[in-house]
Amino acid sequence: ADAYLDGGGGVSDFRGAKVTMAADVTAQLTAAYQRERAGREAMAREAALQQRQRRIQTACVRGFAPGEVAVTIPVAGACAGIPACCSGMLADRGSPLAAIVSHPWGPMGGSMHDPNVLALADTLGESGGVTTLRFNFRCGIGRGHSSADDIRAAWAFLRSCCDPPPSRLILAGYSYGSLCVADAAPSLREHLSALILLAPPLSFAAPLFFCRDVTSPLQRGEARAPALLISGTADQFCSVRRYERFSRGFSGGARATMLSVRGADHFSLWMMAAPAAQLASWLQATFGCPLAELRQSAGEPVAAPGMAPAEEGVRQV
Image (tube, rainbow, N blue to C red):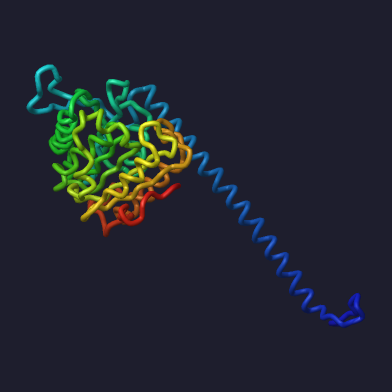
């Protein structure tokens, strides 16, 4: 009962055939389940991305995101012809960790209402639960000193008006704002926990700051904080070659993760899933907790996340 004559006149074992058939069926069912699960996960990711995009678009139209209030940030030592204060939007969530988000170049229409700025604030604030402040620079013309002053004034403002005052800081910036963040970071290193540079326009850094080098201190590790840099392979203001060359300039104790998003240009990062997912993953690795628990963390980064770009280079996502 356990054997049969095969086509060649030999004897084959029914039990072996049954085992083979059962294994084939199991493999097919497993593959079907995995495809179905992957499809559900892809649909969930797409739904979350669309929801996030709607949230950002709504904030762009309204001028504010949930929990934000309009604030005026005084800046000490204002120069002639430059206002003595910055306008901003603050979402005070009472967290020990706060984030300041800087915008693209004002003379070309950049402001705190840029969707990429709102996307950074959304990940850090809505998802991470930390206090966020986005603001308008007073002026974008010159060597960048006034913009760095604005960032320092924004941190002093957070420390004076939030209850309780934050003790640790994440500096984030998009485009021109990312270079300003790199410039101001060393002066705030006593409180600095992390740096996020989204679409840094490295190919145009020299003309933007009248040939003043604002990024070398970051490459030398003077900020003393882990940094995440994200750029697109089709970025109009930072070529792939320039981005890779910048990655090789890190030295000393600098800790940075440099990511390149396939197909993304300078303006489209906020619409894509990869930058938000990579930012969330990096924040979780940096602070050693799920993104949703970032609000409860002390804001101290754990052992160096990411890589030394001088050794590992740019990673595509």
